[in-house]
Length: 220
Image (cartoon, rainbow, N blue to C red; front, side, top):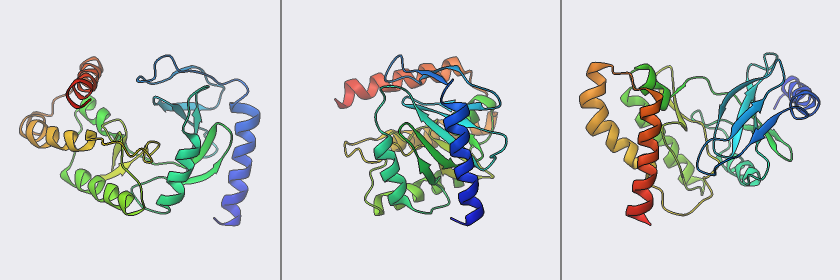
């Protein structure tokens, strides 16, 4: 990391500690649903929320994001280790710094496959190939791709990115990405590809909940 980058990261960390964290209010209501973001201080904006943490951006730092873990949610130490093992790869973010409950990450620009379905944006085959290659790379670094689904992968300029690697130390079997690829091949390409259908979020959330139940009962 160059000296200019180091200076920017140190300044960003100061902004996190002095502006973001003191008034930020996160709540984890259910372990299998995204956390709830109640309050975000200006000029910070919330880019999204997962089951463990939420991601925030500051207009003065367009190339970095801050991932803040909700109170009581574990995993930040594991996530730092995953980024250490991944090193530099174009399909993954990088971790520049970490605190007790936050990470400073390289910002990845694009649209999640989940939002592609909602907006009717075509998901190109190259995206699937890129993500496959990225997951193979992760395995070569001693990691175990886990919980790779439509909200955790992204398309950027026609290429695939993996935006959430927080569970890549979990060694339990996970077929989420394989199931998504099957759905892409047998449902998305024959139907959605040609019709450019837009799927309401309420339906996408219902499919997500149904899939979770299917996995629980069929593979437990």
